[in-house]
Length: 283
Image (cartoon, rainbow, N blue to C red; front, side, top):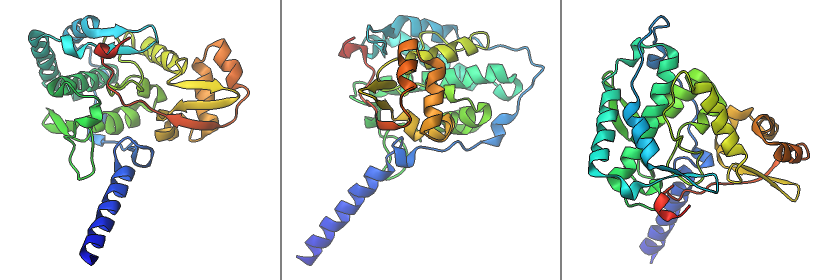
């Protein structure tokens, strides 16, 4: 009986630990931690990167819903287009990105992150959630974010590396969170075209407006503010407190939402929908 009680207690402790340590939950949201190796760049470089294959994929398979959410038609991706996506990723990883200027680098890392995410989902499809793709190292890990998926300039790189060790700490722009897509309904939209240096600022602002003015991003009901969990997980990127999140949201809010935000001073609750952003699940 004592052994049974001990086993039950151990199992309970393990499940409790898992609940705390699951990646991308508030308690375990990765901090921005600069990987200095990727600060190298050539400001005089005029070289550009071709994202035409990614543009074709996005325009073919990303569907904009009437609810303001972009979904991916994973179930209709042809074998040929899966191979084209894989070839695009392989082409990106062969680029000596340290020799490019920072504007090209920023677009490169965002596009690589999103293309890797879609490729990973397709490799395991059908799944209900990207969190079900449990390939990250660690006993309590879920999802693919910690898995070293590719090599760039000889370095093994994961999705977490791209987002939290490269994009966030190098560019220090909260709008980064509107660019990298985690294949979930609660996530900011996957853009229907690649990021490029020429379009970067416009697309960053467009992504912020689209998310903040959608109920899954920011909403005020009966005088209470409800936000995506993104603003909790990464609050440091949005000013470090509720007031900072509200100030950020007001920059991109439409007139009606901005008026409502003027009347709140704190966040009442946060939530996030981890269901796959699958166009086959309705629009």
